[in-house]
Image 1 (cartoon, one colour):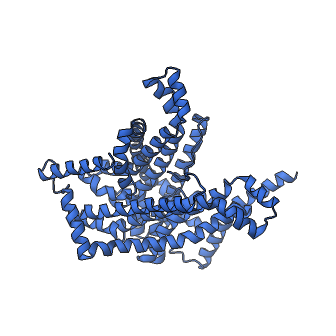
Image 2: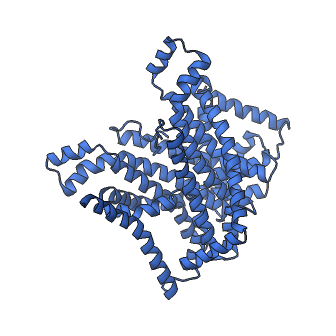
Image 3: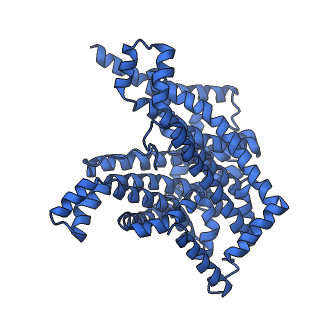
Length: 247
Length: 259
């Protein structure tokens, strides 16, 4: 079933496109798209563009992860920090981060720093909120037991608080990475002149649809790989947690 | 008297910190510490906000964006809950659609704009359908999961008491899945706002996203900040408003906080 339905859909598309039941100009046969993918990788162009997007994603994630986890932990453990910072988080978290792009573009100029930072902020807020949630929802009994056994300060943090919050931190990192990819592809689609998002936009404008679908499929594969891959890592590394972050 | 004092002190930080920041910003921009070209004073931004509101520009764009979100959300909600319930109830359907969804879901919704514009008439309909895509998947996913997490014992008990077909669905399965459906709807609405702004930036000449982008292109920085503020208010209103609505309408339903 899991293989049959997608295969069936693709076959149906192939036939409809070949016999011009749907316009092959807008919906080229999947095999054509497949060959474009192969050729694109052989010529190195697709690989280069994918690498551009991945590099941006890597930088964005690296910028967001450390500070995000740190701020989330601080907010969870120090009440004044939380009170001071929470209004900003609550205000900015529901805002589409793509709206920050024009601000970053005027402040930093059109270029990589503005693109990458838009992706980074997208991840940052998610990581902060998940981390805070991890500290907040930990079983208070764990804290008590830790204290009763004499754990204080740094020891309490490393031995009790951090392990308890770790599943949620990891979920935050995973969701953050996904959000950063979404934001970056949107940025590429809108403003950048390179990357997979731009590739889709450019080929849409030129109506070179096989190339457009190829780039589209590549983004899908990338997203799938990241979400599924990280979920597998999470399940393997954090074996003591049950199914947190299924959604 | 200590406890109330403590509460007041906490409140002061939460209220005081933004006020302090705004005051510092105002001062820094006024004295030239921050470049006013990039960081106009908050008071100037408020002035522009009032101006935009007074001449009706802001209301027009906001209304357009809201109408788009409304249509997209309605579309995503009806289809998402429908497909989600069907996938939750029929194992075969779920097995078949799961891999298709898994591949499509992580694709950033803005990329669907070209595809959708091939499928439906370009313009308003294409914008709305593109906006609905991600919300649809999100709602369908959470609804399916909602049906699946229902305790088997409960279903079996209902079955033994003679609940079948429609009765089983309406009295056991639907109420059981409701918290998840609601979470899906809340997340879906949030996503609709995110996507509509992006879509408006790319492909619309009206709406808040378009206004924001236009303001940047002609470097009306104050209008950019004003528009951003309105979008932020909208985002807060949608996400916190819906949570409040749930608390009032479905007080027995727990919001399943998706991490």
